Length: 234
Image (cartoon, rainbow, N blue to C red; front, side, top):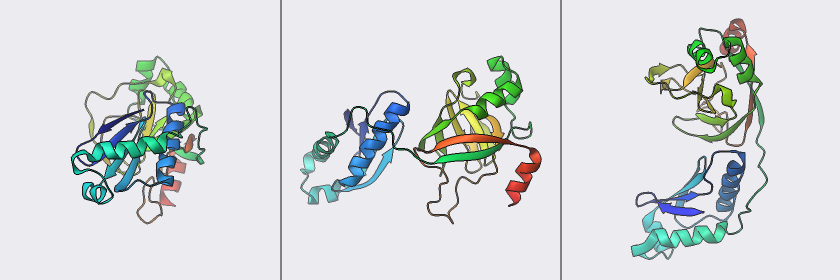
């Protein structure tokens, strides 16, 4: 485990080195330990692929006993004390099993022909392999409710688009490498678009507003253009 300062009000705790289910389990276990025994002055914990970042208020840390000249070192000691109980191979904390409808029609999958050419597979085979895979939500980031999911078959791995789109519609499903995403809102983006879902991924009227959460297991269910329209209107 490595700990490093991020500016003057955050620490990054590196839990693992590679993206995968084992590292995800360790990140979530570390997050649970840090949440169970809150650190003085820490105002937010942010898990990622291989790290947990702790954001803190320096003045509150000093009031809690941190030496003004070495607040990061004081907090690092507290972090290491709590994470000394972190198992090497903790059991995965199971999230929800979530099915998400996706329409793979050309209207919603502008990059499907290029994906097929890049992989040497037919468009139909790309779609089949994509929706038959299971995906793990590693983290949310980039935009509110934007899920970074592992599980894309290696044969569908693709580089980021050379020229990002200025506008990617909400609900678009994308691939980069062996990661998969769903755009919760319309935003610029450089992922390769393979389909679109009518499922709303972020809604401020809901509690919590994000539909997906780290640890959730996602499967995609192919739907027709007509089903997409019906579900969008519901």
